[in-house]
Length: 287
Length: 343
Image 1 (cartoon, rainbow over the protein chains, first blue to last red):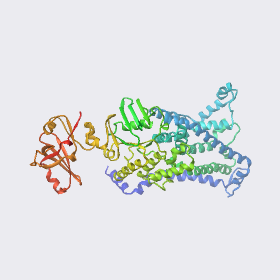
Image 2: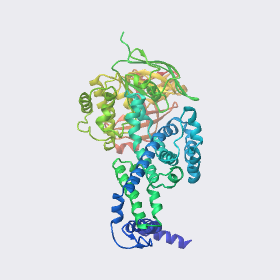
Image 3: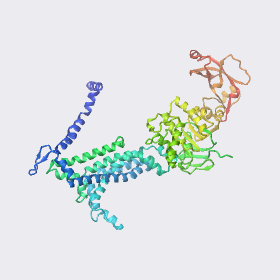
Image 4: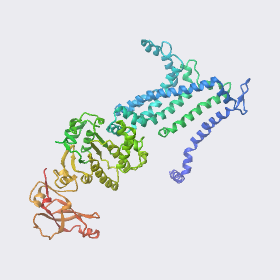
C-alpha cells in the first residue's frame, strides 16, 4: 500500500514519465507495425521481379509506376474505383440525410437511442453474409427482379451498379451516424430564429440546417469513400466481371509483389488527397 | 380608435399537466416599451413565445395590430425576436446574420447591404460586418441580435431576457442604449425580464407575472409605489409587509400593508412620537448591514413584526454601523407611504 502510494506520488511529480508509460505501447504499435508496413509497401513498390521465377529483385526502379500510368487497363481500373467510391459516397449522403433527419429531429426523443441502435445493428452482422444476401437479391429471378417485374423492369444484375448498391448498403451507417449527431446538436432556437425572421421551412433548411450539417456529411464521406476504395470482395461477389484496384492488387500479389505494392499505393494517395480536400472544408474538426 | 400593438385575450397554455399560462388578458400600446416581469416559471417567456408564434396557445387569442394571428406561423407575423442566448447563425458573418430577414424577403442585394450596415451602425458595430459571431464578445453578439431583429423594422420587437448573460456594467449600459434605441426607432418593444430594477428603469409600463397570471399592470411608479398584491409588493423592490396583529398595533388597522424601506427614517427612541401625518413604531435593531452608499436596518418592533429601513449614509460611516446593533430606535414614515395591499 505504502509502495503504491509512493509510486503514485512519484508519477504525479513526473508528468513526462506518466506520458511515456501511457503512450509507449500504442506508439510502438503505430510506428513499427502501422507506419513501418506502409513504408515497406512504399519501398517495395520501387523493386522489380524476375519474370521467370517471380522472385523479388531488390533493384531500385520506377518502372512499376511508369507502367501504372501508361497501361490503359490500370488507368481504367483506377478511375473506375474512384468513380465507384464517389458514387457510393453520394448515394449514402442522399439516403442518410432523410433517415438522420427523422431519427434526430422528428422521432420522439425517448425513442431516438433505439433508432440509432437499429441503424447500427447491420454492422454486427458478418460482412460476407450481407454481401451474399445481396447476391441473392440481385441474382437472376431474385428479389430485385421479382419486385421490379410488375413495372416491366428487371434488376440491375451483377456488375458495377450492383457493386455500388451493395457498398452503399454496407457503409450507410457510417454516413447516418455523424449526420444524426450533427442534426441532434443543432440548437432549436436557430430554427426558431430563422422562422421568426420570416423564413419558411424550405428556406430554413437551405440556409440554416444544411450549411450547419454539411461538415458532418463530409466527415461521413471520409468513411464511405475510403471504405469503398479499399474494398475488393464485394465486387468479386456481385460485380460480375468488373475489377477494382483491390482485385488487381490481389491478382498481382503472388506473381509480381512490387507491382501489387505500386497498385496499393494508389488508394493511399487518393485518400490522402481526399482528406486534404475535406480538411479545407473544416469537416475534420467535427470528427 | 387606434388598434393596440398586441392584444391578448384569455391566453392559456398547458404543457401536459403543468399550466404555464393560466389566463392572461393584456393590451400593449403602439410604440410602448413594455416589460413582462416575473420570477422564472411565472409564464412570461411562454407568453412571449406564443406572441412570436413558437408555441401555440391551448386557448385564447393573440391579436397583432388588430389582426388575429393566433394560428399563424412565426414567419407570417410582423414580429421579430431577440433571443436570450442571441441565436445568431454561427456559419454566417455578422452582416449575413443581420441581412437574413431581408434576404428571405428577396430584398435586392445592394439594398440589403446598405440596410444591414445601417442597422449595425445603429447598434454601434460599424466595421464588424465581416466577422463571425464566435469572434465577438457577449455584448457585441447581443447588439448583432438586436440589429438582426430591427433591420426589417417589424411592428413589434420581442426581447427575451436579452441582457441576462451580460455582466453588471455592460447590462446597465445596454439598458440605457436599448431605451434610447427604442425611442429612436419608435417600434413597440416587449421586454421579458426577471430583474425588477431593469423593468423599472426601462419601461413605460410593466406587467408583473406570477404563477401564469398577471398580478398587476402599470407604470413603474404605480407598480412600485402602489403594489396591487402582496406578491407585487415583495417581488418588485424590497418591501416590508405588516400584517394582522402587528398592523393593528402599529397602524391602527388590520390587513396587509406595504412600506418601502427607503421611506422609513430611523430615529432615537426618544424622538417625538406624534408628528402629524406619520406612522411610527418603536423597536430594537436586530441587524445592521453596511452597503457603502446606504445602511440597512432590520428592526424588531415591540408591537410584533419586523421592518427594514434603508438610510442614506449622509452622516453615518462604516465605523458607526457596528454600534447600532441592539440599540433601541423609533421608526417613522409618512402615512401616505403605508400602502394597503388587498389580500
